[in-house]
Amino acid sequence: MSQCAGSALTQLSEEEQIFRDTVRRFAVEQIGPLVRGMDESQQMDSALVQKLFQLGLMGIEVPEEYGGAGGSFFNAILAVEEISAVDPAVGVMVDVQNTLCVNALVRWATEEQKKKYLSQLASGTVGSYALSEAGSGSDAFALQMRATRRGDAYVLNGQKLWITNAKESGLFIVFATLDPAAGYKGITAFLVEKGAP
Ligand SMILES: Cc1cc2nc3c(=O)[nH]c(=O)nc-3n(C[C@H](O)[C@H](O)[C@H](O)COP(=O)(O)OP(=O)(O)OC[C@H]3O[C@@H](n4cnc5c(N)ncnc54)[C@H](O)[C@@H]3O)c2cc1C
Picture 1 (cartoon, protein in one colour):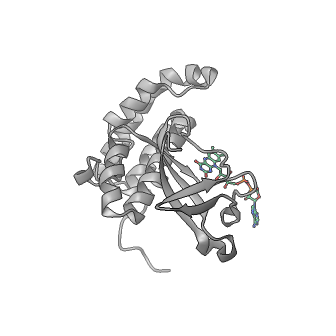
Picture 2 (cartoon, protein in one colour):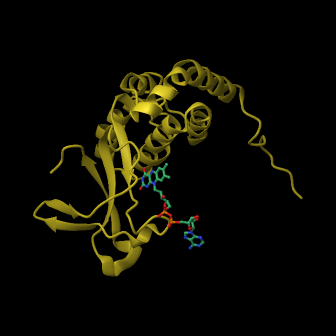
């Protein structure tokens, strides 16, 4: 068996340890006292969401040029792990924001889209990743939502389900098919701002 040249994943760098400990302290001290109330009222505490932004936990991987923390995907995982140990609902909010929404934009968005939306996601806009439908969970390519070009816009028709952060979100990454006959190759994603018709 060959040995890995780098450190094992269980050995955090000093920077990662400091980051993890900071998030852990925040989760225990600031989220912990709110958990029961949020569960009972089935509401995310809006002041808590603002604190998550202030600490940079909603834009961990957003490059600094767009106002983010310029961290790594691994930093995002550390944050999600520490927050989830205290409140998995807040953990999944931070997870979807960072590892789905921000990550998709960092990888696939145009420069113009990055400038606009990554800055928003780092500074106060919650994001959602709308892929699943009633008949399409693990089998994501079975999605039915249709996108049809009308003039210089697209019309999206269909329904999504189980969309994390939907209530708080200002931006939705919505998956739809332009051509069902093309299978997965017909599927693309749209950036839909809250309130769009
Ligand atoms: C807390 C939470 C948050 C979520 N947030 C979002 C979100 O933000 N955006 C979004 O789009 N979706 C979201 N979802 C939906 C989630 O992505 C789906 O629940 C997931 O894709 C599974 O789909 P399903 O529930 O329809 O289960 P199914 O796909 O019906 O799967 C049911 C079971 O069958 C197994 N299975 C499925 N296919 C196979 C196969 N081919 N071979 C063997 N076993 C198989 C699965 O492993 C599973 O155990 C969320 C779900 C949860 C629970």
